[in-house]
Image (cartoon, rainbow, N blue to C red; front, side, top):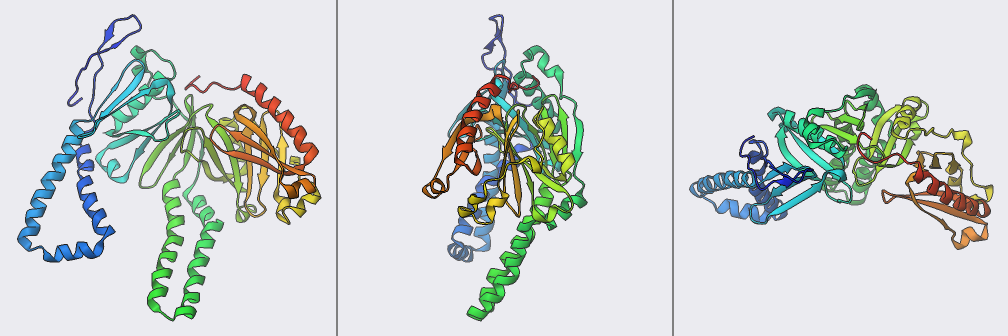
Length: 448
């Protein structure tokens, strides 16, 4: 490994000192970091374009060439130095990352705190044959990352870190390799495109792009105002769907001993892992125009992770099969098994009260919301952190109450407009289910 260094070692299990080998990132990294000074200049120009234009008009050709002759080497030197002063090392118990040119930063990441490691490859990184590692760590708000490593090195390091996190000995962790995965579901590009076209957000953005410009023309009779407003709206309408299509292209869900793996992306490829035991809630979403086709979208809340989508679109049966893998022993309640609020709930939420429903099984607390865009939320009993009953003055008048369930991901799931007596009983029973559920919960460790 280029530029490896050996600082004082860490104590091994037998009390001996084990040498810790520090490594540097891939040699292509300086080219990525060299853009930072140039990005500062571009940001200044965008922030104050008038002054930037004035400064450019004052520059002669000689001065401009001189500035470029100074800027390019300076940016290259900055990229090289930031790469040179960045090291990482894997010890028996932690991953160490040292970085910083003027202000030094040292991160010591405990291996048992690692809950997910994602491998991502932006388009230029794919061309260069490098990849970026992003680490989800329990209790950390921001992901640490190693950008960039060689593609093979990144996957090997990921496998080693996950093996260490699972409890494998340091001597054998690098030999474990990446756990094999079995494909569970793949989303065809054609189905994804049709699903995006049938999404309400796409039609809403398109309607705004078609309605707002004529209204502005009638109000102002200014072509520039219409163009300045209509063109961005039309671009946003297409960019929203196009961006999702590019990001969710070739979506594949696989199962392995370290969790469910997700591979996706048309231009930028991303390899994510849904860590076992860390899923707090699962949402099955069904927009209005998807119902005739029987398609649904599955979303997640994972503690300490930004992973939010498990399946972008799939037939309901296939999606429920994937949910059964991420939440073993959980079956999705049928629509007719959901208990609806009493009819007097219409006094608090006219019409929309019909979209509410609640079901409690041996494994999950489930609620449904929405008439046009239905959302069925599942919370395993073991993931419930607290249960609350809330009742406003209008609800109290009609003997109604809400039962709120708080999860470890900082989210709240609400069973809305329940009969007050039933809500009180649900509060007591859910508190007991949560207590007993945690005793039988799956371990959060990798490959456990």
